[in-house]
Amino acid sequence: MSAPVISVRDLTVRFPSLDGSEEVRAVDGVTFDIRPGETFGVIGESGSGKSTVGRTLVGLLEPTSGTMTFGDTDRAAMSRREWRRERRHYQMIFQDPNAALNPRMTILDSLIEPMRIVGGRSREEMQETALAALEKVGLRRDMAQRYPHEMSGGQKQRVNIARILPLSPRLIVCDEVVAALDVSIRGEILNLFRKLQDDLGVAYAFIAHDISVVAQISDRIAVTYLGQFVELGPTENVVNDPLHPYTVALLSAEPQPLPKHLRHRRRMVLEGDIPSPMNPPPGCRFHTRCPWATAECSAREPEWRELKPDHHVACHHATAEGLPPLPSRRTTED
Image 1 (cartoon, rainbow, N blue to C red):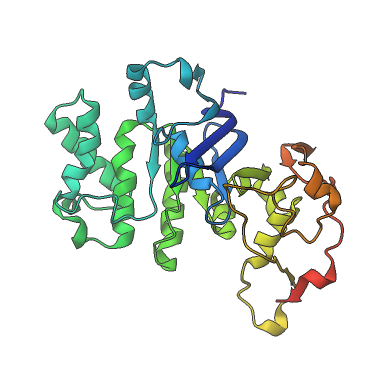
Image 2 (image 1 turned 30 degrees about the vertical axis):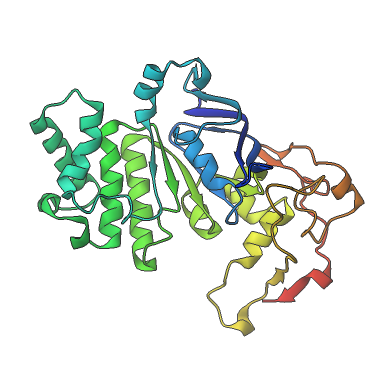
């Protein structure tokens, strides 16, 4: 088996609070690998730490502790020059396609800018590479002379994808990349990502709060809650046979496009709000909202266990067969 594109071990990212008296535990000890050519999905509520993980992968944030290995090289062992040369292969596409483009620059200049920073190409080479990248993402060459305000949201997101292709990325972090787009456009962009992956062999870290979107494109899914992974496994297993109560809750919250009298699913009701990342609850962090919670859950942190091949979970009550029946008092008809 080939080496992972990136290996992360016990990654922790913390930020000081506004008054400096406490720390926000944005990411608190996550471990995972992203394999060549795979799509690694990361889902969770707002504030769960998923975007912080993505920004750390591409070097926009420095980890507080833990190790990150890019290919065969430990990030901590790289000099500043080595890291600058290496990080061009780890790129990020952001949620808002408008904010990611300079409104004063033409599309062509925006496409050329990353190549100019890297250096090593003439103006003519950069221009031809930029136009070829536009075609690769499904846009006409003449659109290169437009400004961002002259393009739709979907077209601008295609431009943001085209910008990073000349850098030969090994990993692209996609942070809520379809959340700001019309529903009719989302499928086109997801199909574009699949085509580029087939053509280029690039790996994705696909971050979203919508589990249906992540399930559509991902090979594996990591479920985050309050800065930690609570479940990680192949997409089919996580979606069809979830092992963690939080995953069950996320799947239960997905709307069904059916009339009410045709819906057979009972929704799992979560009570309360997500706790503060500055003062997470003891034991299992999900126990304050979990219908399966017992005294053990608040007293002891659950171990990270592999209950099925490549399927890990952090829950005291999970078994390879799943979870016990959901208490009826914590459900409601969909």
